[in-house]
Image 1 (tube, rainbow, N blue to C red):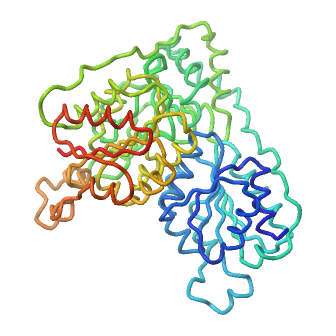
Image 2 (tube, rainbow, N blue to C red):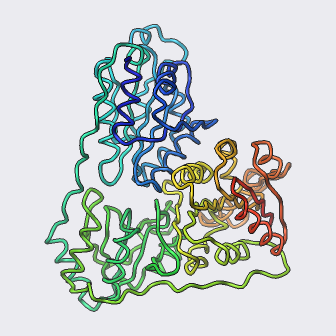
Length: 515
């Protein structure tokens, strides 16, 4: 058994079932090992940012990491943007990055690069495995690192001679470090703040936005009157009818400041507090009001669900009746042009129970959160790191993780062009993904950002750089070129009919909604 095979068998033994790949020459022994063992489901992405984004979407829904296979430093570099997003989402991923044989590095061949240096900014753990005998143990440690709470990115670099040399027996990953227990003093301080009678909120992040954390939070809110808040973008929120409704902090700074202005106390799960996405002249970076006291109930490394349970204990809130979202079915839009509101109404009315919604609608979808609050129960995945081009890959990975659930991708057109190749993977794997492309023919968010920094009327150059016209993108042709059936709609009734067709299609389907 060579080193590559010992690594593949180690990954399988340690609970890894899927490998998203874009291999090259340095990874041929790893590919041969995948052939010999048939241990992992291998999914090809035609660009590395598709590979890393798909691994992110898979892990968010599967609750465990996938592996990626990337080719040397440039291949890893191509996937960095979505590794950045995964890092911000606290997603566990095991990256296997092939490299030149250790003795070949010194000749400075064209693809030679500082792979560790490229990996470190988006990885919690990085190691180059120097010997074939040790690769199994290194692979097991990579899995342990990736599965450590709240989810970490582990990058294991596999030199070619480590892959082809004689390996050891596979090694099972040891149990990852459990999340640190909550601090009882922090729980007591939070209970005191929430019982003060002053306006307060719970700021929820990470796995507490799923059950049982949501129920604990809702009971606390019912007992104390606290609001339930979450960041603008989240790895996953389980939401819809019958679940606790959580208010996302608005992206627009003025709206966030206004919404949070009444607060006197905020109790946070995770290390962060609400902040502005960018800096703007004469606008604050921190959006909490002056005088609002911040209480960190649990850090990112601590057990947030247990912290909320302890807070329920301290407040005697277990018997409180949580306020849950009621089912709300908006009327389907009638005649008229399609626009973000009519799309939202249609999605809210027709969304299947148990669906997974991937949201990279950017500007066009800013009102989707409240418009879909009463839809059938579903999971909502957002772009967490702000690096656009995550929607198509996230949907691809989520569909691999959840083959029996419909995946809906709400996709802006400009962002979609970054990782269009993911549609090809969806076609090849026959993934059940219905994509709605918000085709406003522009980087609409940048038009708003110009106003936000004080430029009321962009000039010719700026308008030209923000437009996606001359020529217009043809999403029907682009999709069909990737093997995915598609149609274009321009009015609301046609969109409703197209969305129903997409939901009824068991494979990938794209709807270009032009407005």
